[in-house]
Length: 336
Image (cartoon, rainbow, N blue to C red; front, side, top):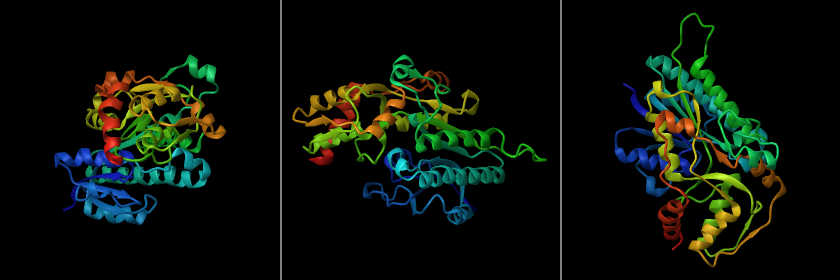
């Protein structure tokens, strides 16, 4: 008999590590994790970890002979900055890898006779505003506004949201029998800030990079202008939002993709928070033309009214609590 399990791809990444820690603590679920990298030592024994590639369909074929997948948290992705240097590879990983897993979830749903829940973290990169006056005017962007991404990563995320919608609502719509659809759910995250893992190449990482450099006593050159403004969220809130959406009854959901957010800061305001805790922090601004253009195309804030209304989303960390209670104490401990 196959064992019921939750699959987490990209489990060694920032979101993945936090998610494994949260879910494994309850002891209710068998966790199956997949990544190209090993899990950190502090998470050893929390899951059955497999070092592998989401493009390896033979690997998934073997897994489903042993496990019945109840939920898939698909976190594996090539992030925004690296995707611009390798757009073809980004498409392979971000789109084809997601398609492989959606097909796997569809097959599992049919075998089980009930939907596999498919959790997909999306991003503010799915938006693309045309200029700064529009960004200032349309400060809080809704899910269906300005879906014109300017990066390969953003295009990948937006398209994968559409693929998820297809597999949830229209898969095999011409088949003679009605297939069991997957239960696809997605959150569009703002820039995420983790106190437990180092930044890993996202275009929004200038904020957390400031913090980590300051904690180590190293100077930091910020690659965007002082007035650059985007929304942010502390990692614990990101995990809570994923779990809250995962647990919500399907009947409560009015859509498949939801914005979530916590607070918006300009780069200058982020620097001020860093220097409040690390007065000796040496931070300068040397904008990179290409990455600056990407950040300028992202919204300054997100409208998350529907997430609050449908499944009770409410961030626990505002700016002060994020820095005072979560980020600074944990980052200090990491380096000292």
